[in-house]
Image 1: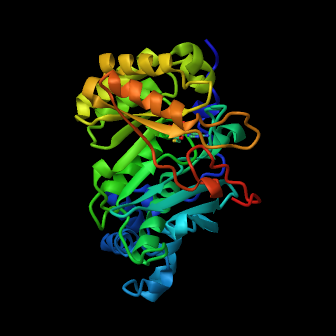
Image 2 (image 1 turned 30 degrees about the horizontal axis):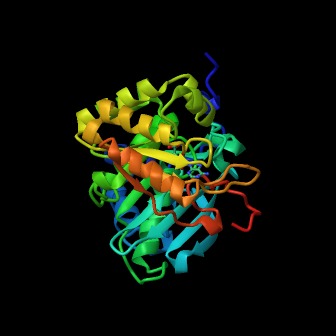
Length: 372
Ligand code: SAH
């Protein structure tokens, strides 16, 4: 068995100052009371942040001017600066590069569809999982993001939608997917707290529906079971990419620790506990994992282990710098989908956004210099 990658060392270097989005309601009140202020000031600050989606102290005129600075310093320290926005898809997809207080870089992608708007957020700066087809995996892990750094990506996206910053006018952020940089379940506590802030009703949280939040993982089986025990209704996505251990050991190196069978067993447990269908992500790579026999094996395995509780999302491979790998030809992709479906398993191809601005699945590298 190989040693686990860096992920479990949970670096604390560079963690930002405490922020109100790190804290639940009682914790926020306790901080405010330590400052000698009445507890309701914490609720006022939370209303600015979660309900008005504002981080501008100048707009917080309900806080006495003499106290505003102290409260803002204690609970709303600057977290991350949007360094750059890049748009494509006619202005309906926008990637944001964030620079944290210690210089750590991460990215989020806001995507507007006819009936919904989704933000794809990062849970870590970089990633320690080292999947060879993913640009984030090539750069390694810088550090975990704090709860507030994760929530802040969602707040900013919700404000951008409300303010009509994407083509199509004012709208509402409806969905959050933890499919940006990082492995969410390797930053478990902070991600879980972020999920709570995201789904908690306004003004204690951002008030999104649990079912519109998706946590995507390489398949850290014990963490999947732990998440099941939280009794949340969030969607679980599992990045499988191969039905056999031999290939998955190379595509998703953490498979050497938790094998396909274990990953699927924990996924089944998640589905049984929550009643939610699990998304199985499958990046289709030409001549690597796209063979008809692999489609059949995938279909058979999922039918046996998950039955109607699985939904396969095929993602045509997005190009990454320095990789020789390629998406499968359309005919091969169609055949693959057909064979999975023929095994009795739901299977669709994911609509990919943001490829030309390096904002699509697996392309987030948070490079301050690249054109993307
Ligand atoms: N670490 C988590 C969260 C990232 S989600 C996870 O792996 O699930 C990003 C998704 O995009 C994952 O399913 C990942 O495997 C997939 N992906 C990575 N590189 C890709 C690429 N080059 N083309 C298409 N999908 C890719």
